[in-house]
Amino acid sequence: MITAYTQVCTAFCNGRGNSKVPLKGFMIELPVNALLSYFLINGFAEFKGLGLEGAAWGSLVAIFLRATFFYVALRADDNVGLTYPKNRHFWSEIGPQFSEIYPIAANFFVLSVGATVYQLLFAQLDLFSFVAITLIFPWLRAGTQFPNAWAQASAISISQALGQKTTGDLTRFVTSCTQVGMTLSVIILWAFLCAQSMY
Image (cartoon, rainbow, N blue to C red):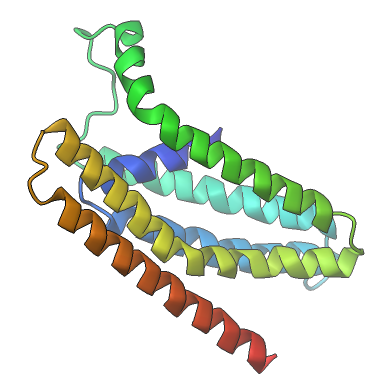
């Protein structure tokens, strides 16, 4: 539920053109997740550590901090109202929202299923290998976040253009977005390859 809340906040901020808030949220979550998971797994001082359970607690605390940051940031924004308007019926809004969201939701569902399958495969490894993957995963997520954020922002911009029926330069815009997204992906790929060669 907390993860869903942060994803909604991320999409909302990107849709408003305020991508700095999601970026700050990730910069809070990822280091806290990595450091806290390390200490909770291995222990520190007289604390012996929780082993594999520590990785789960580290991730939970980190995502909770990110969700709290989103709430504080949106609460401080005078142009954002966190209460639902009284003059708009909730159920009548679901249909139009669902028609816009379900293709994106289906895409994320497929990706989540794939990630879950990988986690099930990783769970069959020995403890130290699984912990190593758990510690490396936040950095992989940080690297892939840039092309992922670009793709999401591009999709939002295209949806807004279609909704406003301003499709004059849409073909050129889609081509440019695709080129930039592919370039970012190749740069991140080379960065990961260089990091792997160092170890």
